[in-house]
Length: 419
Image 1 (tube, rainbow, N blue to C red):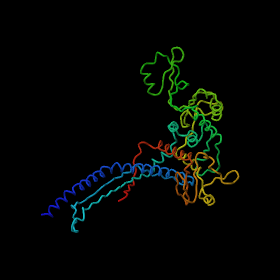
Image 2 (cartoon, helix red, strand yellow; image 1 turned 90 degrees about the vertical axis):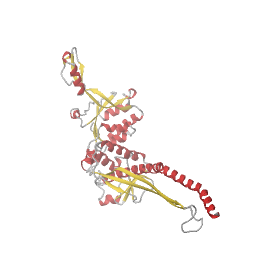
Image 3 (cartoon, rainbow, N blue to C red; image 1 turned 30 degrees about the vertical axis):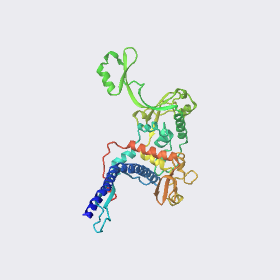
Image 4 (cartoon, rainbow, N blue to C red; image 1 turned 135 degrees about the vertical axis):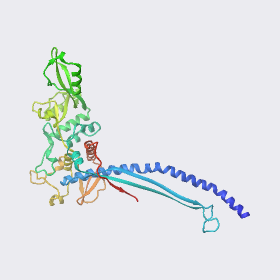
């Protein structure tokens, strides 16, 4: 009877321990979800950024060697967190050990099982994104903080027929190229923007050339006004009792603030790009616009920047000229070279100097922002090379702008990990 009483007392004394164990279990199970998000979300974010940069860099390096670029998306990452546990409380007595030798047993297991879905970009989808010329939306990234000089250097073949080393956008250029005059012009524009002397803005303009012959004002009815507005036209008074139908056009403009309209910098910009000096506003148009073939730049000047915009593939090929290649690959002919005026290989890196450079060495670099291994060498962007890092970021944003919103989902390669 005494032993039975002592057993009952031990059971009562063990109850607080059981309560503590249950409370600890509840606390762990309630916190694992938020802690899992805190532990993994930023890690996935960093890895996605790093691998995106590496993919862009390896494709730029491939283009320097006249190899084809390949892009693989990672549209989905599904990570499932599981926690499982079991236990048994024996009241202080073991199954095989006599006396009070064991409280029981228990186990707790945590498992993270991410599933990665890869989407190779190929066919019409990637061709459209890579080969379509850029549009005026490109300048959104300037208002968002992108460097104007970098953007104009990478994304233009020419402005008003002032060339920006167009041969640098060819995989195998036969002759060297130069862009010194173009560089001078865009550096002046960038300098003016840094001083807040200019701004890029979208606006409307009415063509000065009449879209119709003068017509009697009384013959224009209300429905005519509505139909004209619907099609982008407007009626304007011309002379007594007559109106003319003019086309209203929405577009991108470079506005010059009053103190800088007649500045020396703007005078030189006008001279370089064949613009009419002294204007407070200049239109920005693509050379693909219909009127570009009718109003080509002339020595007397005009009020429009006609821009020959590149495609993403041309931008990447241009940037690939900033990739340094090892002497071994030059001598063996693995890396394409262009003979210069002196018969020696032309140094294409001078075209992108100061804006984008990719270094190369045999061993993995220690201080690199992004590095990739290709053809036995490491190609990398130095961690302290802010301009090259910014160029890679601009390229990624521009590429995203070019991608179709309604992109169809192609075949997915789904890989479960951690099973």
